[in-house]
Amino acid sequence: MRVRLAKTAGFCMGVREAMETALGLIHRVKGPLYTFGPLIHNPQVLQLLEEKGVIRLKEIPAAAEGTVIIRAHGVPPQQEEALRRAGLNVVDATCPWVKSVQRLSRMYAGRGHLVVIVGDADHPEVVGLLGYAGDRGRVVSGPEEVAALPEAEKVAAVAQTTQRPEVFKAVVKALEKRYGEIQHGRKAICDATQNRQAEVKRLAGAVDALVVVGGFDSGNTKRLAEVGRAAGVRSWHVETEADLDWAALTECDTVGVTSGASTPNWMIRKVVRELETRRGRGESFGRVVAERVIRFLLRSHLMVALGAASLSVATCLLQGLRPSLGLMGVAFFYIHSMHILNQFLDKEAGEYNDPDRAKFLVRHRWLLIGAGIVSAFMSLFLGWLMGRWVFILLVAISAAGVLYSVPLVSIKVGRWRIRRLKDVPGSKSMSAALAWGAITALVPALSAPGLVNWLVTAFVFVAVTLLIYIRSGLFDIFDVQGDRIVGQETIPILLGEPRTRRLLWLLTGVLGLVLAMGPLVLPEPGLSWWLLLCVGYAAGYLYVYQKRWLHPGARFEALVEANALLAGLIAVVWWWARGL
Ligand code: SF4
Image 1: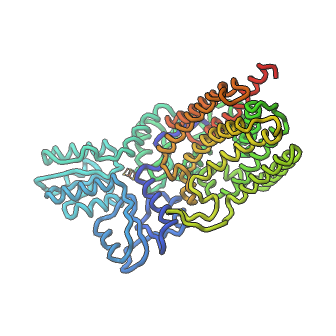
Image 2: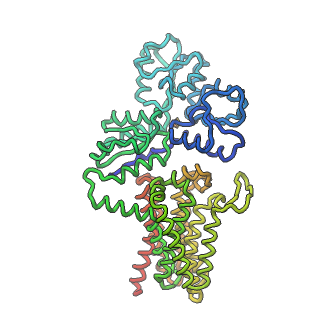
Image 3: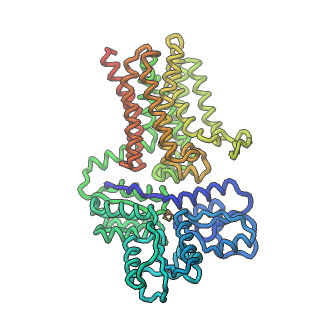
């Protein structure tokens, strides 16, 4: 089934900041960590926080120790004060949009206006806003309730930030009709809500049905489904993939998917995966089979291993060496075992980052472990056949790979506690890129020590490391939520997504420059210029991501992994054109 995932799906800014605050504090604070009420409206996220030891306070205690996080929806100022009086250290994770509406409510109330709050009376955000408006605050859910408001000389309107703009406008109109001129903020509804609702309206015309993923308690998620229905498309609000209505969905060819502001990526991915793996109406059998084959190659790590073998053809030719099945085999088996075994070491993050792969891992656990061990032995065996130095290099990088996740020391550097190499900030992508560089550039050089120039090898090593770093850096952006949950400090967590994207663009430019300078260093310079196509390809997938033309998932992963295959293909064609 074809899936069109909304660009705006996933956490909004306010929820993301609240989650970052909570997950950051889990790893930092001493003493109990509480949230006052649910931090956000998503049961799966709340369960996750509970499993991480975050306790949900339902009432304000008379006295307590520890830290309490104020939920993204905010609380009345009286409750915040009571939490402080109880002795708790209060960390405010109220969304900045909500805070600005709280300030407006307080300001209008202070100036003697009747403050009309457009929203759901029992929603925590509205309860908080009422606290700021004091006895001058009133809640209405629609224009029909304006008639019941008390008389007032001055009136101001504010909105629950996730309201439908049409409802807010209708209330403002009804208030103006009754009271004359009234005060209201120009941007009453938050951008995240408006953009999501606008995208649902656009999607409605292009899909057969719409699935909105999010907590059943989440007001903004419910409203997205309402917006979809109002736009004339069949819309379902689901909390998990188990709620999908297959009887109706199998009649569809293209399904739109969006989510509420508090839905984590892994919940959306599970739903998307379920939809993508079913056959839609009118979808060809060949397409479904091709999709399944690609998923299998990705989940079993055969595709990434084939990419490494293919890349090794290019790196041999760049160094003036003849590619061989033995060198391709070392690259294939080493990268295959590395990816399988890393997946087991990174199991917890994997469950959030890639639920589809995690499911495959559970289902084929022993087969994958067996394949990983066989591949590790095969790479060592082939390396041993190639000579002492290749074997020593393979043993050294395998040992470094094992030690990567093993606690060795305990040093505090700034805010980081380093126990394992894995704890070194940004080490995840860098270690993968260095391993690829060693396998595809150093192994061929060490297998023919008398035939290579080490400056050339260093050049090729740098080029491969950059190419793989760009690939892994993009995957780190996709995996940011899971990595944050398990406390892995990747580059996107350290720098944030926009800066990481800029870094990847910069590195793509650097890789282009490096390859363009090939003729200054390489014995066979023409190939490095042809490999600039791979730089263009990397720039292409970064652009596709930036424009959100394809969503993170199996198809995007296949697109990215194909770059290493492309490098090998270019090298083979170039080699063949020169008469092998
Ligand atoms: S939906 Fe808007 S107001 Fe609510 S938390 Fe997200 S950004 Fe803030």
